[in-house]
Length: 226
Image (cartoon, rainbow, N blue to C red; front, side, top):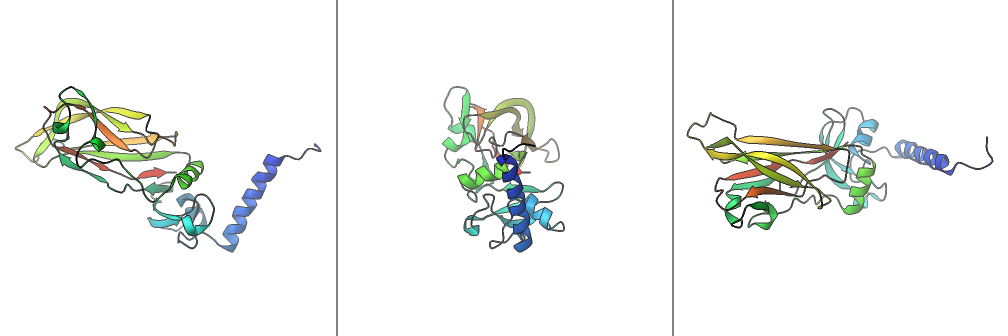
């Protein structure tokens, strides 16, 4: 026993009591008026809840800054943020690059863009990460109709949310195919990290030059936190 109060323990107990009291008085419903902190909290309060769009408020503040997310309860509850534009158009992106071999960020080209997630601001994003332990995201690489992936590989970078780190991988070049049933037209890149600052992804860079004329594009999946 000690005469010195354990302030950290007291704070933890108070926060736990505050959460239980809030659930008793006003249980989270996933609505704008009664948002949950995360999809996990919504599932704990309502175990029979189904996948769908719900309001959350990670910073526990006024529901005025609550925002919509997709809650995936298929396995463990995930809070998912969808990009503003999920489809990077299928086109010959590298024809616009310089003459020398280099990585070219798609956002720098005509019709290119960085991936934005407008539903959440910086403060709410910080609190969402504090309530999570794992982040994940999937991006699909697509060849144009009538094309397939060849055996030739090319390096590719995926820009993290910090914008000073990136994932490095390889993709297979697209090539014309007279037989629509032969060969794969897409690849899937799956990202999962306990470093929650890395996701969501912001941009893609492909290594090559203007001599690479094949059409390709990407489908950007939601960034999910659990």
